[in-house]
Length: 323
Image 1 (cartoon, rainbow, N blue to C red):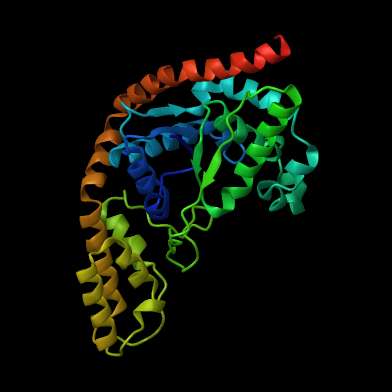
Image 2 (tube, helix red, strand yellow):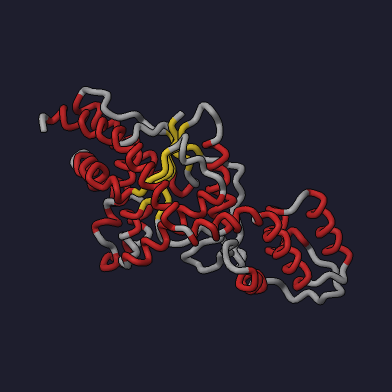
């Protein structure tokens, strides 16, 4: 099964990205029947970030994070979207010519910002078409996404169907969204969904002192130290149980209910649990960040490996239009 995942270069992956996307995707990639295409969507990043140095830095950080969780770049495909830009953007143009305006106008990525049209660039408006090109270029079959991305995969299928039907040829494989309904929403330090845009995330790759400072900012209620507390309503506990063992989780729950255990104690225990749980990944991340040439080499190898697949797809559609 051919699985494809793209990640924008908008910043370092945070705890929510890691638990909700990176670790499950790496697990999928290890199954012998699967081959995974993991790419860094640096072209997409331009819709919101225009700083080339920041995009490059973020690209290396994202790549380092995936490598830190042991994504196997030898048996899978690991690449930057921009390095295959001639193929992605050429296919995007063909797809643009089959995409009706109302489809793009109804896309969540556009509608959410349409109240301030001055802030909407053409890249944001046509974002779903480039995303479709990213997927269709590599004959991807399964696209693991969150519920908020389901619409874009449906749009990809509709566009691909339109091309196939109007040309009377099976040019494109129709991808399917894979949505894991069991993946819980990872809460941020304010209780909302963890998000870079809300600045409520936890960066597990920070130096220990800085990571502890982030954890200490987790919002709590005003229950006194000696009073019992409800663990099920507390953000710190909700995060702790994601990385602690069942035994550790039960022990913390008992301490909450017994009283005499403050939120400061819980935050310290969460910090210790995160350091222990991500010890190996943190060490590998620091290693790759200190050795960017290794990251560059792995990406360059992946880009050469994926190029023939992109070329075949472009050749198929060029042949239809006699280009």
